[in-house]
Length: 233
Image (cartoon, rainbow, N blue to C red):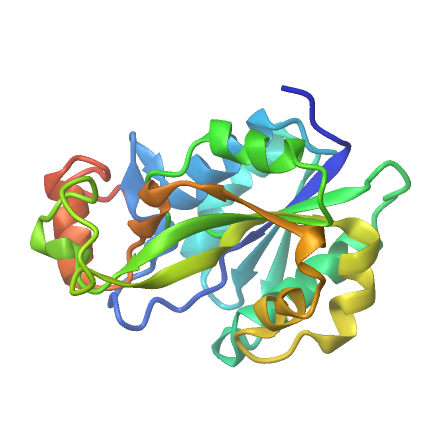
């Protein structure tokens, strides 16, 4: 599948307050989740990977150090105020990308780290799209940790709403213009909604509904072996 020249921004500075532990350090296939997701991003052959992590968390910084040493395209950025929301992390990621030699980049892949069933095939499909924004589409579950399979039903009591969001691929020039408008926790989604419909497309992947925000969701993900039962760190 052909992709355009792109960079990747991985938003990994969340404080995981509802979970009660750093989701960046959850273990999947024997390595920290932040490393697992970075390796998926590497498969797409980006020009650069910017990973935004929280400041004052040496365990998270240490977890990604070895991988960053092995791959010179990986750069980490610390967010001193992660509590201000995802938009500020993206702002910092864009700033770091602009400070690199970005002449070859025409698209940016933006992703988080807690959609535990995300794979490289989905990322490549996002990058192959021709629209200004190619986003992921999935359903937001009311409580997916109750063990109900996504394929069993689409009843309204199970699904809260349709989501069009991360991961997504976006035109780099547009993202740079939008940087100054990114504030709070929903800046990018608000800006995307202002685009003409013809400039946006989405790729369905209901497995992306499974993210990790609560201890109950973590326990279920471990029971399903989507995550390792014991963390490394």
